[in-house]
Amino acid sequence: MEARELLGLLMFGAAVAALMAGFPVAFTLSGVALITGMIAFMAGVFDMSFIGAMPQRIFGSAMTNEILLAVPLFVFMGVMLERSKVAEELLDTMGMLFGPIRGGLGISVFIVGALLAASTGIVGATVVTMGLLSLPTMLKRGYLPSLACGGICASGTLGQIIPPSIVLVVLGDQISNAYVDAQRELGNWSPDPVSVGDLFAGAMLPGLMLVGFYILYQLFMAWWKPESSPPIPRDFLGTGEASAADIARRIGHALVPPVVLIVSVLGSILAGVATPTEAAAVGAIGALLLGGLRLDIGRPWPIYAAAFGMIGMLILTSNYDLRIARSVIPATDAIAIAGAAVLTLLLIWGIVVSLIRVHRTDVLRNVMESTMQISAMVFVIVIGAAMFSLVFRGLGGDDTVHHLLTGLPGGAAGAIFIVMLVVFFLGFFLDFIEITFVVVPMIAPVILKMDINPIWLGIMLAMNLQTSFLTPPFGFALFYLRGVAPDSVTTMDIYRGVAPFVGLQIIALIVLAIFPDIVTWLPKVIFGTDLG
Image (cartoon, rainbow, N blue to C red; front, side, top):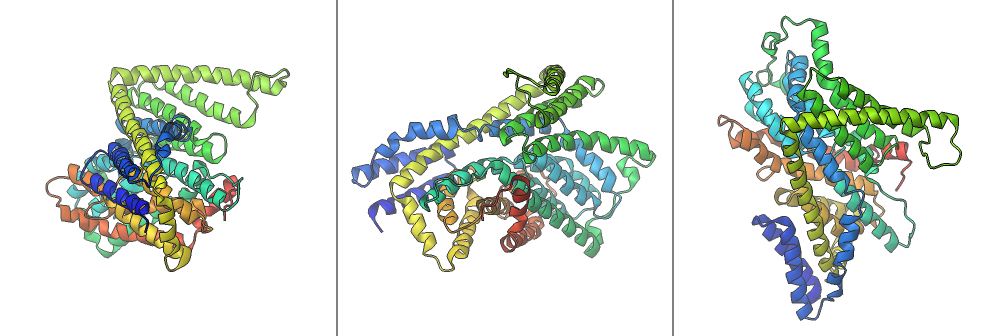
């Protein structure tokens, strides 16, 4: 092995060691890269022109990248929904609906976890929220502590795989770049693009399959060990004297707004009406309106009018040409443009009212601060990872990775197995953002040159990361729950509880490996994406 390739591997090892020691991610990546680059330059094995390309790299990867613009919008959407008590109402309602069934409260946790994943996509917030709200109730009603803890951790990590997921947004951007690089090296200079929408569509069926596995496990436990999942009497749920109409009204009040928001965001992407970034803007506005509605439920009409306006504009946009800079505008388009103008005024009215409400209660300031902190963290890591990637490539690291992976026994299957194993273990110590921006650009171009579908590879990586988030002793979801669990719940309860769900995740990965059509079928049907 040449000296520069050895320096590249040492740089990667030094970065992982520094991250495990707790140093800030972005500064670790850029700092290790700069120090290694200077050492390599003085040794005469590195060209400093790679560092000179850094401004253009930042401009291209962060400043003008429309895909990454979806990150702060989805973060705003998730934090606003978290602060507007949507999760609390959903848990209460689902508990009321399924609680009287043996194991019903556990099923409610999985359903709410899936809904929150599709509306917030923030793993830590989901685990903490559900740990605070549902864990005390489950323990009080006699649920086995390990089963309750395992269910909450597993449902909280669904935000990794169920779209719209921040993981899929950043992963989609990296997979797209890696696929283009791989195709160009193979001589294809006009490859079909891979979009975030493709990954969203590809993740739908695997995400729902995972939720189904979780619910089946809960039903199995309720049958095998009935004492682990007792039913909850309706009197305890507060519905003993409630009429069917009243229960239906409460269920509709809790379910309809978030479901409408999910359908608006995902539906606009999957229907081809909006790009993921545009749909993220729809989600941010919808979350703001929902927050305004929750904070003043007695005066809902401005919010209803705004929601009607937003949905109406989506429908008009998909069916009519609303451009006004035309010399000739048909009568039907003119009517649609006028209708869109009225709907815009309704939307503006609702947004202004919602902003006033969330500002008066100080929710807006907290949401904006959280959004700024999370988004700044992501983009600073993007810049640090860009520096790391430039130096790594300048040291011939991409060639080293290529030789390592192509030299493995078993061909493409052996390479994918090793990559999945490495990503699984790295997920113990590194966050998905570091893995996505540092590891994926190294391994994905090599794997994608082996005639592997990039959408399938992206979903496998996302579900693999989700699995590592659950695995003891280092899974991040376990730490989140440990921080809010009562003292009566031991760390071993949490570890024992998540073990079966880790097994279910591994089974799901094996199923996707054997039947890749589960991932690739929906993108092919919706977008016509067929990448092999």
